[in-house]
Length: 346
Image (cartoon, rainbow, N blue to C red; front, side, top):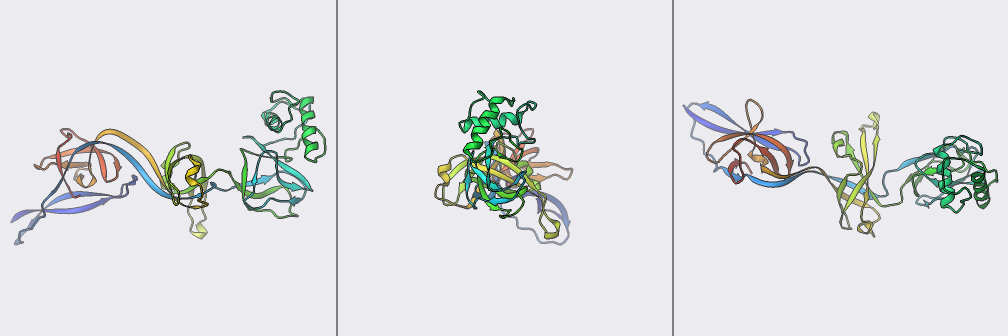
């Protein structure tokens, strides 16, 4: 009996940006009365010192970012609504209730109580004073958390300019507070509906890319991280992850939970003339500098577990693997050095 070397391919599921990794395992087998096997010449590759980046490419959509619901706490009846696509800026009406405007204020804190002179100090007061000052009503001086007589005076002037009753007070539902200007993406409410509750869905006003992720890829969802963007019909640029939202999915309709990323376009000129379309988003999860790397096909699965590479002179060197990137894998092992030649399938 002759001892033959049979090469079998083992596909290891490695979720690391470049997709599946094909690893080889060599199995010794005895075959009686078998004809000699004709083996193809072995392929080899040099161990290189290089820079690697663990990256994942996904397709997104260019638009204005993910929709979010806008709700009102105003009493009364809806008597006026904006149009889909309208952009609403600071001080302008978001909608009308009982024929009176409900304007937009900028801030990170919604109003959670009615405001009037003599109330306790709070950050909501500062939100109102900052908006009044930005709109030209500065009787109170520098904005702070104190609702004073001068705050009430400034508020009355603003109310008069907007055709509102000059009370010097502000109800929690008298304005809508958002982080900045908004763009109306769709309307939920209709004229004649109660003014309280969800009224519309809005986005930001800057161009942005929306990318949906499966839960298994949540490692890509990192606030503030940079993403390389290739805009169809535009040009390549970079973006910044500015929003992360999660959807629950609907098992009855077969939809799974998703992570929705909003990626701002760092250079708006890259999207000029492109209303909408597909965008390729390249996420970089990690980078390694000056590491030893071999083709993925050079990895061998060891019977006892782990991996190894085999040199062109037949020496097996156990290795520890690092990141995978563009068909290459980071490897470390005793005796492994740059320029060494190893057997590979690629």
